[in-house]
Image (cartoon, rainbow, N blue to C red; front, top):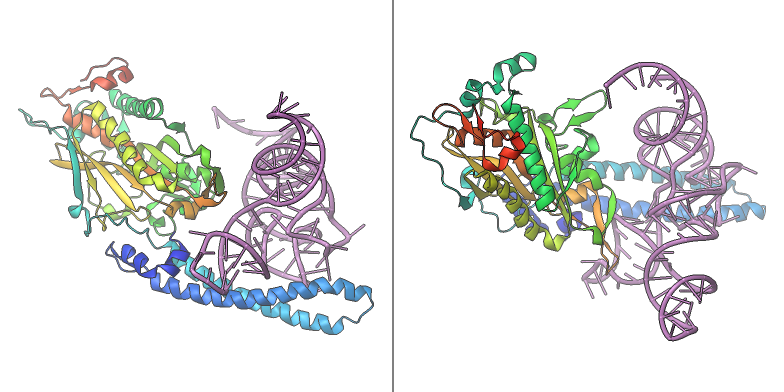
Length: 424
RNA sequence: GGAAAGGUGACCGAGCUGGCUGAAGGUGCACGAUUGGAAAUCGUGUGUACUGUUAAUAGCGGUACCCCGGGUUCGAAUCCCGGCCUUUCCGCCA
């Protein structure tokens, strides 16, 4: 959520940064107008309430001294009704304003390259060299099916498309990666592991920005009004919703393994083969709560933490900064890490690392108290995948495949694979 | 799922036969006094949001907040209704 006071005081700058996304003004002018209307009404109604309170306090004395209160009660009844009427108006204006406000994305960071879609993202760096195959490389869905470690057809039978059954060494590889990533984040990089619920309520979904705008992308459980989480970002960020944290407890680094559930409503026909785009996939996520002045430094560190996973697995990747048209709703600045996938012949997103600044903190009401000034202030939240596990499996299968159809296990993973060095 | 009790400030805990309660008392915390220093003791202070004024996220004023939402009333932490949550007992269950 954007800062209403900033919309009020620095309207032009706010509008400029929101419009950089290239999708209009999101009703920002309307918010500004409604805010003015709201404050006008507030001044009126609060003044009325003030006199109501004042007179109410005098009534007991009047009664005690035996004064007739009939007339004053009549007036007070009228005042009370007028207040109720105005309150309804204020509420209506506030609701309308908040509805629009909740649908306005974050302001993008000023250093964001301007562009309309992912074609204009800015490449920051590359790591590793895409492997040259001296045989015909297969796509991971063929490798997995041939090795009988991925089963797409049976998954379709028991659930539907965009689900995968993993089997034998495939299931083990997925599990090994989860443990490998969690161990790296917790033991080497200073994150505390969280194992959260995989369903959350509406409030949590609103706190991180998935709701109200993207309800169609979520799996919903109507009987409880719960949602299957689309990412661990939701439960983990909302851990501290409505809390005032101690400054000394910052920064907080969390990592969490969870499955993620997404309808992928808008991506019909894209990535239909393999494990790249599934309704359910596993992900290890990193989430940070930090002081505002440190958040951009923390974003760089977070991104490097994710990159380290790929470096240890020796999989080529690159890092891009998302352009203004591609930065997600809640984010101010995002780096995507993309792995080299031979089957696609290009780099494919495997991690997205974002600084949300205070956008989510405002929605979820996550604050901290400054030691020196004793003032409360919103924290900055960040998160990044470290990494999407299914896509990592795909990257390993494709990048480590051999001519005979077997797959070499990356050295760092062998201990996690129970000593297995090759999947065949 | 059934029954009962309950949800008050950082925490504990009064109030709940409606007004004098933003909220007693205690603990904690901050500052000051005392001390060679500390403990103890004493004094003072100690919520958040919105809003008016303002250069100000300084000060001063107003409004709201005693789980959430609605209602009764001139007036509600206090009464009524709905919801959520917690605890205990029963049932069910990995």
